Image (cartoon, rainbow, N blue to C red; front, side, top):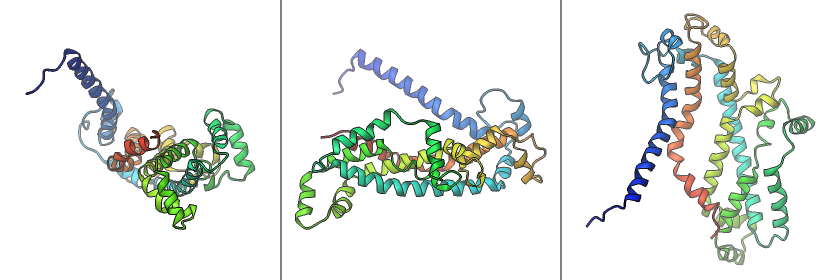
Length: 296
């Protein structure tokens, strides 16, 4: 027999449903507007005011043809993939080793070191001192400046450390009795049990590096050939698109008619990989973060 819902419960469900619908609308509408605007007729798009919920006048994919012939877009895609893979590899090694060391109770000074590195989450040198350090290390205008500084995060260390602390100590002790070294224990015992947290950290690192443009703007003043995808997207959105249309002059009717369409198409092209991958790895978010945030 179905129990009757309390009035307070019904009110909660109604309010919760309304809020979730509004949040869904706010999240989906901008993406839908961006896709529909990118395939709209350029003349109608230039004169349209407000959101675009369907292609204006007729479907026109000319903006995508222009964008896909822009060589700098593809080179920036390659640069971004290089930065993501390199940073994720460095992050994987450094974060797992640091998390393992700080999770061992036998490490005498772990609390003191954790206080020191956690201090950097609250206070840092700032943009100008960071630039001076990178310049002093001769990292500016090199690919390493976009790989090394972001390879290690205190937040990721804390999550990994807490996740490893949740692994029963008896497993490590049993492996040590069998003659396993710390590296063997980390690789064969600890890491397989923390793979959800590890996957989330890799995801956080990859998404952060995918969206990063300010580092390139600051540290690559003269090497536009090393720009990541988001930096090229910034150029397309903020600066003139005349250089893009000149690269595909046979496709564009003029240097300005497809300007808005090119901007929307550029955003779609740069966001599409993340939108396609995210649904398949979303399940690791909750599991990984809870494992690395709650100590049993």
